[in-house]
Length: 198
Image (cartoon, rainbow, N blue to C red; front, top):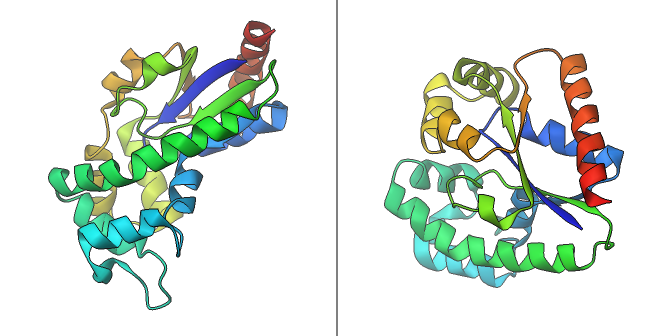
């Protein structure tokens, strides 16, 4: 089994690269998706978040109001650390369960947005960084996700810098160009990762 950490700043196109690797046959373990699962209604994770941040972070139907929680934690490093202390251990356990279920010869791709921030590079056999210029990230967040430029810049500022991410990369996917260029890079990466797994 080859354990590959996949990361990139918000708006870099990391999720698109993850989808393409999964289409090639990678076993994809998506930390963001798992982070949502562990705070669904009725979970211990959601109860812990409400205990820390109060019931104001819930919608009327009892689901987590991510926008409200985001506005709290992305403006205060201490509050972000408190949230991470609740969610990260739960996510880690679930990711381990999924990896244990993968075939022995699998390329297991861990889609981990905060890989650099949490100093996780050493836990993977290889690290892939999806990279794009900050202004490209901002344009995507404003155009595709409807964020204000100020909100986009705040999210980017709360993450590792491009230089910090690139420093831990074994492979870099440059996603500043068109999709056909991205496809060619992902295809080439898959050939290398498959060879390593074999």
